[in-house]
Image (cartoon, rainbow, N blue to C red; front, top):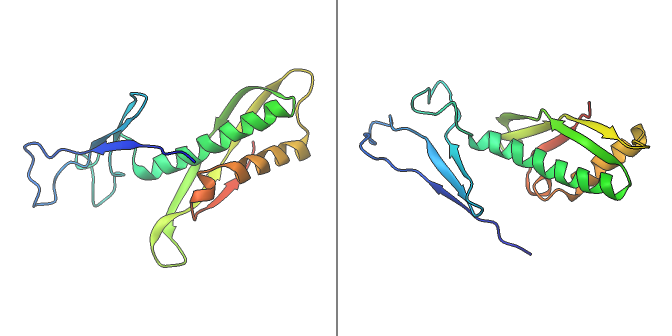
Length: 154
């Protein structure tokens, strides 16, 4: 089908390494030129400055990727069905926990999309649920993860 690339780069620089007190900050680079600062999630084991609170951690990136993919399919299906979307906002949330294999993973992602419509018609509750169902079924990222993805429209 298609290939998607990202370059992830971390450099030690002058910081020590063997003491496990090296910074986890790094860069994600994408083909269009976007550069995103990445880091481990701040935790008791990796508090700042070992992790960068202002950077995107991999867990947040996964949640954002699921949300973004769902939104893009939702917008496409809404347009195809004749609806006009003025805005779409999702306050998505992922839960890190232990999965059925006993491994730490993102076990659940909840999407909480809020959509503002305009035009002559907007979807009723049944049509809205169907739009979200179609978007979820089509989302490449949702089809690629083991986590349960719940959609709770607002």
